[in-house]
Length: 451
Image (cartoon, rainbow, N blue to C red; front, side, top):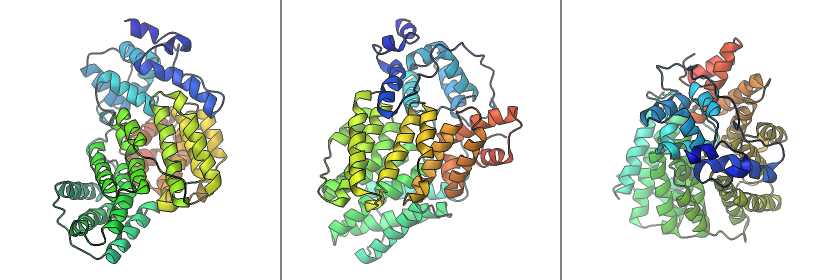
């Protein structure tokens, strides 16, 4: 009971608490790096009732699943909220669907308290929304990754020229958000098999390994994430990227593999392993390409500090990335899209993570997403902007339009990303009270939410 009582005290006292309660203090400390106006959410609020505002028969939101797990653990709202560093009323809002669980630090804290993997809280329902041929393509990629992990890729041995062209086509389709997003996965499964079969033969090994690292760090991991594939499957892709980069053994290859797999490690709850991965690689800044890899790794380090309650480690890597972006300008080596726009989008995401929604909106509205060379990142921008707008009074219609912009760019991402779907569910709850809107109901329907 002592830890629970401490979790309800002032931010100064909370700074002395280990575990989830530290995340409340984190919001104060990160504000010094990211800007003013941050207040810890949900501290001192009065408890709310537990009446479900989402369909209690349909486990299609994170909040509903969170309630299921909490009750199966026989833990009260007060106990779980206290140990996770939030108020009982805030946790109740999340479970009712009145407030989206859209902070990674809160997801990690709740998963730790409930003793489950974070991915278990945010997995997609079955059947997944926006299916088409996507689930079949996911399974084909799963089988290809499994075959390669057993050193039995079962593909064809092809020339480096042929494989170079196929990798370029796959990456281009992924980066520009090809409308046939399921088709990307179908092409990936065969390409994974053929590429690793050709690597096994030993000809043109260096270039083939470079192609494999680039493919897996971007398209394989990224496509699986954006279609809502299970985190364990994405971890298989990240491990293949890591093994391939080790075999290639260059700083850029190792850096790309770490960059591609970091988010996967976070969502499996392996933050310490993610830190170890970042510490294991050093990329020199003696070429334009390496400078961009080093900049993205610096952003990764700052991001990890933000979600892992290490506020003292947020600022320095962010400033390093900013300095590198000023030197490089808007560039796109290895398809990273590194530059000032990327830095700005990270700052908006960081403000969103610490729940300083006004700051996130201010940063986002100062950016020009159309200048980013990657359509995938343009979709990321509109999602970040929309999620922040959804929490500001009087801006919910703007939030719907921002998320609709993201859906027009990359439908699968909006329809199958669990956090985005939770934001849509929150908007839908408020929309029902306000008579809602056709755009919102349409997005919610396409995302498989009850409307």
